Length: 245
Ligand SMILES: Nc1ncnc2c1ncn2[C@@H]1O[C@H](COP(=O)(O)OP(=O)(O)O)[C@@H](O)[C@H]1O
Ligand SMILES: [Mg+2]
Image (tube, rainbow, N blue to C red):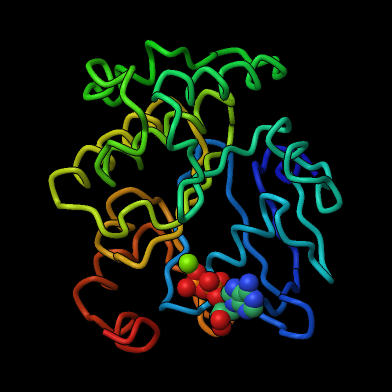
């Protein structure tokens, strides 16, 4: 009972899909408090569908989603944000014509609805992504893809989440930008943020996640425990079996 309540996120046997198209089949997983968990899997495995179900953009048709013990399956997306689920979606969903500052201030304002102990401030997120200091007044659409990804993460943090969910933040990014993001995720882990990271890049997942689940054809087919990462990377078995590598 106590372990359940302390669990940041618990997904029990959920199904979800798009109308008649069933995508997720009895997916179960958990993210502990202060834990960083990755979901890895090939294109089309259902990872983004899972993210949409967690953040309330897609209804589930079976099972339950709980945050810190409380069922949130029926809450609309904005209520889940208020319950502390911060999301960085695949295509970032920033306001391109608005400045970095305006995008962040909007989130900061929404984040005021949450009573939390250690609040992220604008200064904190600029500290996390220093490039933003000189770009606060630039329109977001003028930034590079990597810079936009960092703004999307900063915005999610200003909503004051205790669970940060990211859908493939590495997609299309240059290695150097990727390092910035990996380091920022490392800092967030040190600060005790619980993280659910969807990632096709297994080496990257191993670097930032304590544990992982492998998803294939809408099912969780394997769990990778902390001590298994090295073996998974060395043998290549998981990559061959599930990631088409
Ligand atoms: N809006 C949608 N309508 C219908 N099918 C979709 C939609 N979005 C995704 N799918 C299907 O759901 C499956 C899983 O997609 P997705 O969750 O995006 O996978 P991943 O993120 O792992 O690449 C795919 O077969 C995809 O074609
Ligand atoms: Mg996806």
